[in-house]
Length: 307
Image (cartoon, rainbow, N blue to C red; front, side, top):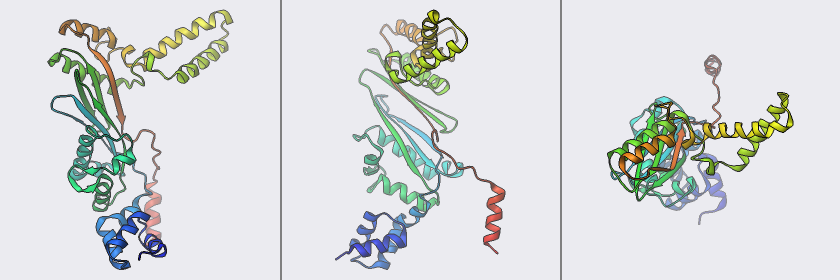
């Protein structure tokens, strides 16, 4: 019988998770040394020691099906750009992006428990853990998004070797090379212009009210009369929409066009309305606080430890 005390001891000795320790002890009939060996073989003991390190490097990867009807985008992080370029790390990211295009789950936690596409004997979590043990760096499967369209196409764009990744989903009853080209143009625009919302209707109301309050205070601070402040605020809100809403933005490839005008022109060309229904833009490490290392101090510490 596996006792709570033996699970606790194994956890303290390896740093592995409680359920992993219990499983290892069950598989080895309670033999502590064999359980430690098993956890090390699976990379779970080694991974635990690395789990505290900041993983802010890595890559954004996308996958689009051959018919351009389904797609996935993911962010897989590691500690260094060296590991981010490793072929095993890149292969893992590509497999996860492909899995994201067909998954039925909607959380990272649930995704991590799915069977890994390249080895169904493993879960995604176990595949990541095994690579942590192999490459010696902490890794983190951070986020994913799934896309699917019936009438239309999905396009992807990767910038800077995986620093930024974009998926753009367009709907159109006519599907041809022009629509695919428009989807690619939109994806590249999203990478460059970084819109926060699709259109005015999708803007978070709280965000708009916050902007209005800022503009109102700015106008009053500028000494503008109260009676014209509301008009100024409304004008600045419209400017805000043009900055943050994809369809309101000026097209990066032609400043004479907004994205809406570009879509209208291309819709006439294909003889059917082209509309953007969804997009995602992932930028590697955004929002992760990266610890700044002082290289000289690090070398000094290692020299002192070696004395």
